[in-house]
Image (tube, rainbow, N blue to C red):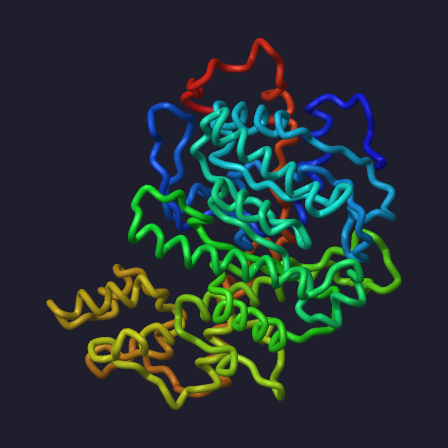
Length: 450
């Protein structure tokens, strides 16, 4: 191993929080755990992630690697075994200290823990299990924990860890098996899908057990997720979204995350990306993913082999509507909930409000604005009591031209130069946080504000 010796905790934190920034699968949702009065923290659905960056990255978890040491040589990974990076590793006790002390200072609401693979998959997974066991059983931490399972680790360790974590995930890494063989020959699709299936089956079994035995421990109550790197390999959007749809249907995943490829290694097998990471493409994939999960769309409706990539300039829902003007305009006071979901500018919550509100009164455009409908998009596709909001043409080029004037079609962060991930080591944070004996708070005590 190439671990640096004699490093203090802050040095390790600097290295291993920075090393975790390329792992985006760290939102928390879908689990309630009330404080018992004997422990520290709680977890409240829909999650502890109170703040997100524009592309969905969670910024309220302590997001670290157990270690950036790794025995694998994945071409796209900054921490691969051939990379000349400074190496560090936490002990389970050090992660417990960091988690508890950050929590007491209100910096975080939970922990996201991933890792490189040190010595072997099972060895690393055992260290992760030890960490979670100490947090839950020794420190009585009841906050949210999302942990990455290690491909190829002992299934017994995977199951034991699953009874301590809220969410588990295992990265698919790349969309196809061919790409995985090319860029990550140490991994295989089977070593990734096997634990994914194990987690899915155990979640299902645990739900049945809970129906009979209410006191049964909960296994991964917030479900599992995965991540795909976008732009490192030549797959088109249709292939990527087809893989995601298949994962949702066959593995009941909660989320598929899409990570715009960043060429950190300069490997000759990787694309040069002269325009930088494909952030706008990543954004469109997230929007389409939302349509699959909440708006009852299918990939075959959004893309095809003849039209395999999303329109960069319009969000997928607007793009679909423009190509299917035969379904519009939709009468707000009569359309079904499923039909309303397909109208640009109407979200699933707005659609629910419309269905409820029109039982009492016929809705007007002013009512829709109060409900939360984005009229600058919806006005081309709807009528209220048979009338459109303005005298507009139901014609593709005309509507497209007007929609493209909407600056929100492209996220502000991308327009202004790209995303910046929140760091614990901004100047303000550096001066505010130093782990010293005099600053560590008593058990059970938490500061009232940051």
